[in-house]
Image (cartoon, rainbow, N blue to C red):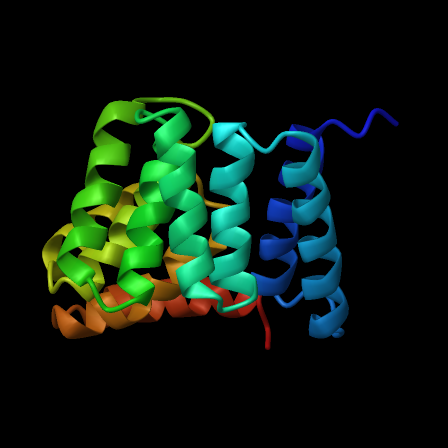
Length: 187
């Protein structure tokens, strides 16, 4: 009812989960709705570091506009250099742009300074993704296992555990995770 920028930005960010989990069939409508929410959020609060960080991820993940996502994450960090979402999303934007080591370093820094809190599982997941891209498979596997143990309903890390276990020669573990995923994601 009160369209503050931060509320709109979180709603736009939430659309990334709908898209990532294939919850709606109309991807274009999802993208348009997320972009509309994010644009409005930035109009209302153009200097809010968290709004800019969330916008960064929406532009990178949903719209595949990686340069825009990168710029928004950098702006986020200009307003708050210790914004863990800004750091992690800048790391992810850099990895989308092929700067895998820089992406990993930023995601790892975000994870390090975050500590326990509401963003911990997301930061662990993003650090795991950037670890994969920078050839840190053992670390990615540890992060995926930790995420699975601490947040068993958070599916994205589990999707990466199957190939990570296979790469590590752990076929039984890969089968276990795969079978679990088939139960919660039959398609």
